[in-house]
Each structure stands twice: as structure tokens, then as C-alpha cells.
Image (cartoon, rainbow over all chains, first blue to last red; front, side, top):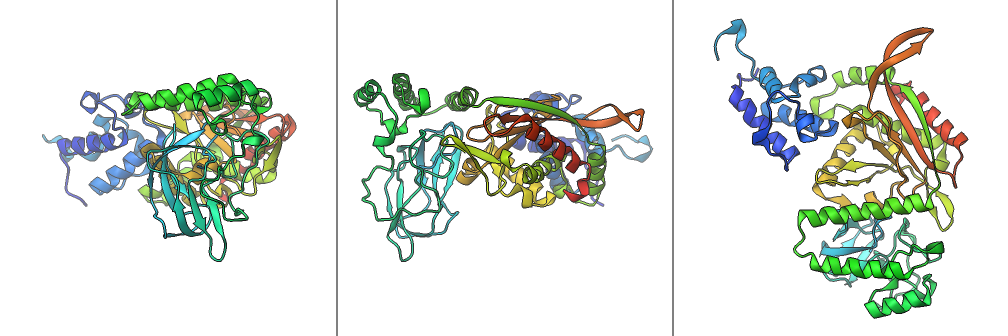
Length: 90
Length: 394
């Protein structure tokens, strides 16, 4: 089990990977609650590469059934840096 | 200079990757060439020792021009990098050197590759070509029977001037050139190919269920996209309807001996390319997925290989990503068919007398009516459907 990631770490990794997939994108303008696909012209191959890169960078195993949870920046943070059990502060 | 597609009339040599005296084996990358669409790694189609490199880096070389001379073991020197078998840009009636056949005798390095006497060109266009300094062999004729017209010569001269002025080239210039290349190929397709179009709706429930199950067994990096199943089904269906796996050459269809499915890949800066997945029918789904990922990556990075662009025997296009349900494509000459897939969508479906919700995909065929009729085309789409109902055997 890998050590828990902070939301900022997850955001940093996600933005770096997106920058490699869509180099022309203006990532600072990325809206956290709208899907990457709608904002960055990401196709299914790009998304697959995104998941593979997340897997390699964060050493997490991501079942295919969870892919929809990774479609937005907020979704990635919730999935990859969940708040501790019991709802304690971050 | 090999022809790397219907839209290519010339390429600019960026760099040689081999030098005089180097031994090369068929398939080795010998040069890097810039075309209107992308930078391409040019593969050599014979084996031997490089005797002479004729083209200079930076030089714009018309398709069909000899770029290098390679001496095969125990044989006289071979003209290398001449016209390749897929000679989309070749005027009808001119001779094509198949890649595997060597020139019979050692040619003088200065010998022109094209045979000017065989080019169809009107006297007035020929005179204009001389005045403007345009080599007719490098011009694609748009007149009757592929004859070169005065307009073709003027266009070629204007294009050359524009290319010379556009230095250094900006992204916008590159996009404009890409647009022009696509315009030229698509206009030619619609001018020359009598298209017919068919469409069918395929129940994807078995395929999608099998895929989800199979992906559970695969690691993140090895998981399949459903598009790979579609591509494999097309390749296997071509074995049963092989006349769609062909190119139109010199007034007749030439059936492909191998099945190289070209996949339309959109580029992030705009435009598209459709390179081949070689021997598509003989690859496992896992191999196809790896090769497709690699192909998309290299297409977008601008490092495709020449055979990938000159080899496709049919094209598959999938516009489902943006929600489009059906695509009626324009055939990429000299191919004679194009298969389109839309988005996989949940729709009401009647099964065993009941209305149920099923994932379905609309498959379309655009085919050349000179080569096939709707009956065979319909059989082809029905075969794709049948194959997708037994996904474990793809």
C-alpha cells in the first residue's frame, strides 16, 4: 500500500500528465468540475494513456470500472487522495 | 522519393540516416523526409550497400525521383527509393517499379527516374512548364485521363513559390499545407471514385461484456479499447470479402495480398493521417492494441514510417469520440473502401420479441462502385456484425 497522497500532489501529477497528452492546452484555465474530454479534446486513446501514466506515476492500480471517476480534476483528487476515514480534516 | 499517399507530390529530405558504404536491410530507416502532412521515416525496400546518396538535405524532391543508389550483394547497383508500389500520385500509363524488383542494370546517377515521354501533358501546358521551370513528372495531372493541364502547372509553380516564401514555417503554415494535402486527396476521391454507401446497426452487448471481462485480467497498460475489436473484425471480414481490400491502379482494382488496415488518426494541431496497422488480421487483440497505441503516439509526434503511409489497403475511421453515431467517409485513394464506426450508444433493441436496452454501434461502408456492388458490400458489413457476436474468437 502506497502512502497517502495529498490533493495538491494529485493535482500536480494530473496536470503534468495532461500537459504531455495535450501540449497545446492552457492548463491553468482547466475547470476542476468539467470533464477533461470536454475541455481538452481528449479521445479514448488519450484517456487510456492518461490512466496508464497515472498508474505509473502514482503506483496505483485503477480498475477499468473506476475510469469514469477520473474524468475531471476534482474526480481525480477524490479518487486518488481521498479524505481520511471518519471524515476528519485534511 | 516514395509516394506516401494520394496527396503527396514531393517531399523535402530532412536528413540521411545512413551514409555511403553502410549496409542496409529491407525495412531499415534510411532517411527522414518532410511531407505536407508530417515528417516521415523512410524505409528502404531492398538490402545491400549504399553506393551513392543523390539528394541533399533540404532539397525538395518530386515523387519518383531517385534519391540513392544501393548495390545489392552480387548484383549491379539498384535504384533505391524510387516509386513504391502504391503510386497514388503516378499519372496513369507511367511505369511503376515494384519495391521488390531491382532495376536490371546499373543506372547512371543522373538518369531521371520518371519517363517524360509517358507523361500525358498538352503541348501548351508543356511549354508553360518549361517557362515556369516546373518538372512535369512532379505534377499530378487533373485533366482527362490524368493529363496535366495548364492549371496544374500554374498550381505547382504557385505551390513551390509559396513553399519557398514560407520560411521559417509556422504552425499555421504547416496546418495550411496539411489542409491543402487533404483537400487534394479528398477532391480527387470525389472526382474519380463513384462512392456507394451502406449502413448497419450492430448489437455490441456481447463484445462490450467480453471486453469488460477480458480487461479485468489485463494490467492497466494492457487493457483493450473496443475500437481494437472493431478493427480486428474489419480485418477478418476482409478475408471473406477480399475485393474490398484493394487499391485502384491503372484502371483496375489490384487486390491486396496482405491486409493492412489504415486507421484515421486526428492530429491535435488539426488535420489527420491514416497510417497502416500491418497484417492486421494476423495480430492478436493485445498486439493490435499495443501497435495502435504506438501508432497514435507516433502519428501525433510526427514520426511515422514510410510503409505505414504507403501500405494501407483499406481505412477505418471512428468518429464516435465526440458523440457522432454514424460516419459516411470519403475513400482515401487509391483504396477502394472505407469503414466508419460511430459511438457505442445505449438504444432500445428488440431481442426475442422484447424491447431491451443494448449498446449498439452504427457501422458504415463507403465503397468504390467500380470495384464492388452493394450486394458484396452488404455481405461485408454483415460479416463484421457476425464476427462481433463472437468476440472471444477475434
